[in-house]
Structures are given as structure tokens and as C-alpha cells.
Image (spheres, rainbow, N blue to C red):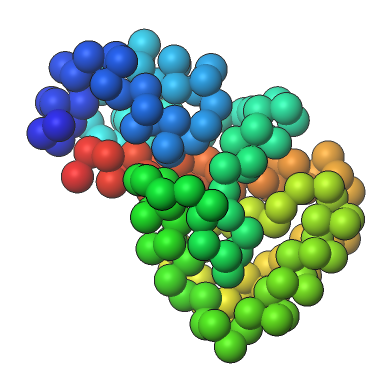
Length: 159
């Protein structure tokens, strides 16, 4: 694919797998494809801002690895995830495992944050600050984090 013009003209069936790697929500993937052509990258990236229902949020995070862990599969999103989590220092591994487990026990799903540009310490601080959220509020926070990740990944698709 050659930038935004290539994205705008690509067959929908070629785009769906790439878009699913950005955000694994079929309704969102279909909406991004249907809204083509985009006048510029910012218009495309704006599509990352989507209000997901709780089931969609949980489905979308199912494919994400825990912070500090490698993805359970290979492929585009696994490479993107590894790069996004590059600020995680292996010396924090035990603390990250413990924090992830506490979070999962509290909310019933993995902790998700747009890790790009964050250090492991910053992620631990963020996780700790979110532990006081009620489950509905936390799902809204996760929705915003998914949107940030989708926006970053859409830029990678276009690049």
C-alpha cells in the first residue's frame, strides 16, 4: 500500500486484516473502510475515536499482551506491541506481574494502556491510579487507551 492514496483505493478485503490489527472491533473496521476516501491522514486517524460498548472493549483487549509480556502470537500487531512496550525495563518484571494480577483480579480483564513513550515506572503509576476506578469507569478509560493505540497503528498502516 502506498500511503493514503493506496489506503483509499485498496480493496476492502485487503484492508480488513490490517485494520483489525489496529483495533479488533468489526464494527469499527467496517466503518473505517466505508468512510473512504479520506482527505488526509488526520481525517483517517480521527476515526480511531470511537465509543465502544463493553463487549467490544473486552473483545478488543483480548488480543493484547499484558504489559511486560510478549504477544502470544506472531504478526503485525505482535511487532507493534513489542515496539509500543519498548519502555518497559526487564528489572520491573516482578512488579509488573504483581500489578497486572491485582488489576485483573479487580476488573476481570488485563490492564491496557497506550504504552508508546511511557517508561515501565510510568505504566506502574498509571495502573495504580486506575485501581480506584469503578468497573464502568475503567472500561471507559480502556476505550480511550484503545483509541490512542488504534490512532498510532493507523499511522503505521499509512506509513
